[in-house]
Length: 146
View 1 (cartoon, helix red, strand yellow):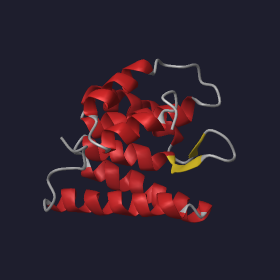
View 2 (tube, one colour):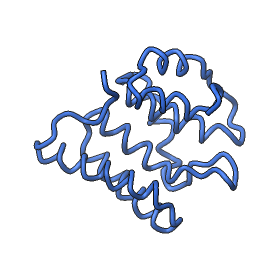
View 3 (spheres, helix red, strand yellow):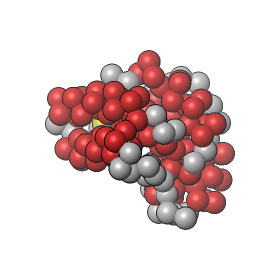
C-alpha cells in the first residue's frame, strides 16, 4: 500500500501503529471534490474512528452522511463497499448505537446488492457490535489496539 493511499492510514490504525496513523491522517488535507474525494474521506473517517479522534470523526461523518447510499470507490476497479459502512463505524466510535445501526443496515443492504462479500462481512460485524453497544453488553466500540 502506498503512503498516499488513504487506506494506508486505516491499516496503520488497525495494526496498532497509532502515531504513524495520526501522522498519515494529518497529511491528508481537504481535497477538492474530485474522483478521489469520497474514497479519501471514507478511509480518513475510518482511521479517525480507530484512533479515537472524535473531533475529526464528527466532522468527516457529517460531510459523508449525504453519500451513505453510494459506494465508496476510487474507480470502477476499486470499490470498498458502502459509504454507510464508514459512517456506521464512525457512529460506533462516537457511541451512538442507534445511528450506527441505521447506517450499518444501509451498508448491509448495499453490500448485498453489490455482491461485495468482504464488505458485507465487515458491515455485519459492525452491526453486531452496534447491537451489543445498544444492549449494553459491549460498552467499548472497536478501536485500534493500544
